[in-house]
Length: 237
Image (cartoon, rainbow, N blue to C red):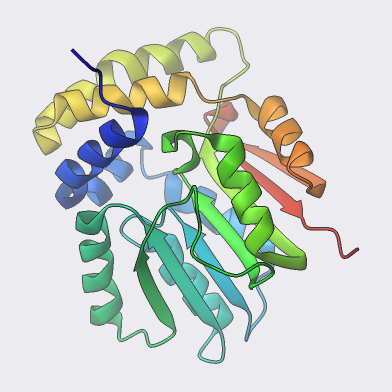
């Protein structure tokens, strides 16, 4: 029997859990994910009138935050390969009356944009779900303008002894159980444990950013290293 590829598995997960995704994000991160994103946005220092792309945008929370930061004169695209997740995002965008957002069904591994298109390119809690981390970073590098910023906010590998073990126990046992209670989706949340467990640590991801061509890569750990921000600049020459 042929096992489904990572891409197929991830697609199935998000097509199923989309309705409870926002609620579960708050439960899983103890509502810390919004604080992490706010701090990341502060560090990004997004300018009015800029253009931004939010890769693996899911239900468009970061896309909406970016649209507020760039203002009416700016433009934001949100891209995701789950139509169900995008449908939730579209409802939010419509409810807020946002005119500077375009949501696109597409693949992070092959971004449907020209080279040097955006001032900012972000990916929030999506890199761990793609089939090839490096390929997606290279694509983000390609579509950001010289001097532009690419930012990844993602679960990471805590380094504190004891805390690290507790974190993995949480992801392995408690989170899937919460998924079953709140979203009737035990298997899907068990998958999220697997994707977080295999994801590179902060140092490895920084090296991957540098290998993709980014310079001055900044790293900021959150909540004991359970999540981290990586921010890299595309060289101007």
